[in-house]
Image (cartoon, rainbow, N blue to C red; front, side, top):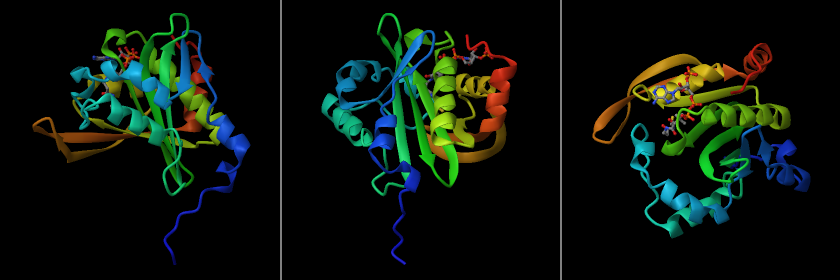
Length: 208
Ligand SMILES: CC(C)(COP(=O)(O)OP(=O)(O)OC[C@H]1O[C@@H](n2cnc3c(N)ncnc32)[C@H](O)[C@@H]1OP(=O)(O)O)[C@@H](O)C(=O)NCCC(=O)NCCS
């Protein structure tokens, strides 16, 4: 037993790697696979402390650190190859302004972990809803994702509302799951079956 984790066969080959570079579109948005070249434009936006109120992370300490991080993530895979690390920057389709990011961690043997942020100037315009829906449809259509999961600080009302709007259900609450920003964090785990997501979108197609 080496403990080595094999990369799923379906994730191998140039065509698959090229598919991971697909730009996604919605009526208002353009989701571009994140690249190191995005670092300059992202750096000041990621410096806004309001993004980190309910998560342990902090703003990137320097542009170089951010660029290095984005270069690592641009491989779109974990070092062992058993996870896809997919990150999109979300732009206004008309003006080109950066509005936020969506992140998906995909494993062959586990639900797809979803995360997101929208820069504060654009909060409450339905950007996260529209961007997550588009990424989730792509993950289902192209990677055959069967279930999504998310973990959210219990005080993060905006994130919980977003997930509810997307159709997620709360599965469990873990008390003292983490400690950051000088307090203990209780954390909801939420889940959504891909089939339920697709059904929900058919039943109410307006993506706002
Ligand atoms: C969570 C976040 C991505 C939401 O982005 P957004 O583009 O403003 O969300 P939307 O406009 O698509 O709104 C989605 C739902 O959340 C609700 N919502 C958004 N911000 C809210 C707030 N501050 N308080 C209460 N509800 C809020 C919206 O009303 C909507 O629900 P509704 O349709 O039932 O009314 C954004 O607040 C954010 O980036 N927060 C900081 C980063 C973060 O915490 N990420 C999540 C880590 S788990």
